[in-house]
Image: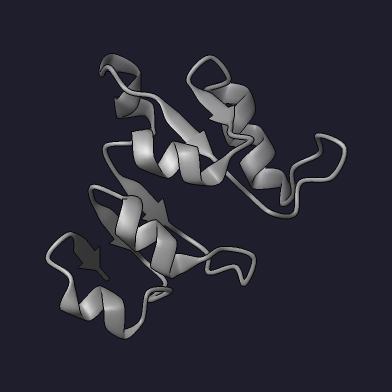
Length: 96
């Protein structure tokens, strides 16, 4: 992530298991502390999806409506195959 310091970027994250402002696991806390001025927690995930240039799925959570995410996102990088067959059939999805 060090190379990102020299670029113009922002990252928003949305995790369904943040409780009382505490983020787990601890390695994510360290990442957010290091880049706190550029990484923000979003309150409305679908609004963030609509406004973002790209959505990156790094963990598939049952709390999210992946059909809606795919419909609203401009581009999705799905590292967990959370979109399943929908991701395979969409030109705006890249998968691992």
